[in-house]
Length: 165
Image (cartoon, rainbow, N blue to C red; front, side, top):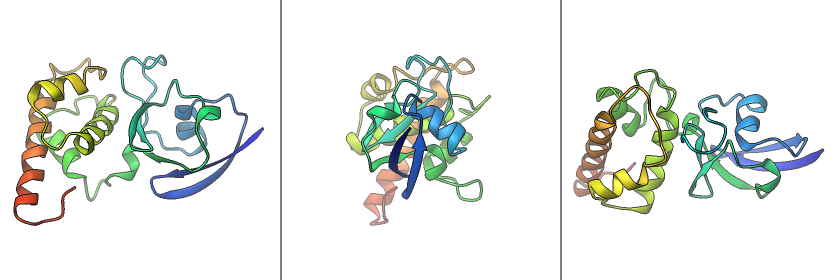
């Protein structure tokens, strides 16, 4: 058994764990944060993406024993609510990206990390950044449109002096 202290969606959580679990298992099974999906279980599909210490992390292959104490972990549950969607989530819905919804949380977390890293990504940079996210329902054009819409709204808000998201 190991004691692990994590900051999840801004809340400090102290957990006692076996130490062999993956981060995805801890998030889903122990903390009931089920937005993080386990798709392939091998880190190839992106459904398990979370942001840990500012970087996209494939939580299905990240052993909890390798996660540092007080790591800052962001999940889809921490960015918006049903009543108050994050602007990227709203764009995702508006552009038909959430057909079955299984891959959406991983995509959204990856896009948020991209936006923090690249202030004005080109279409090619967006595609490159999202290359590890798989979706069986769409042709990815809706996702690209949603990201562009979110980016333009974010830029518009910045130009108007509104706080960016």
